[in-house]
Image (cartoon, rainbow, N blue to C red; front, top):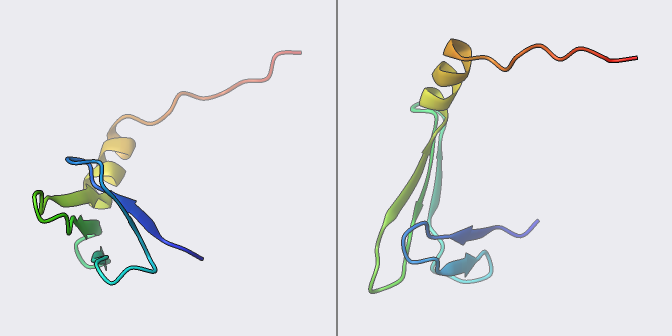
Length: 68
């Protein structure tokens, strides 16, 4: 499996084969972080699964019914 990460700020794409990929899966904080290694950027891209899960519990998807 090949991992590719795109920075949300500068849109630079980093591939797994390169030495400059830095990705963290933090299961304690329920976050995924990717640090952009572009020398002009350095942005920390973060996805918070904990907040996403809480938001989904507060506003669940509507029930889906079948039409026959």
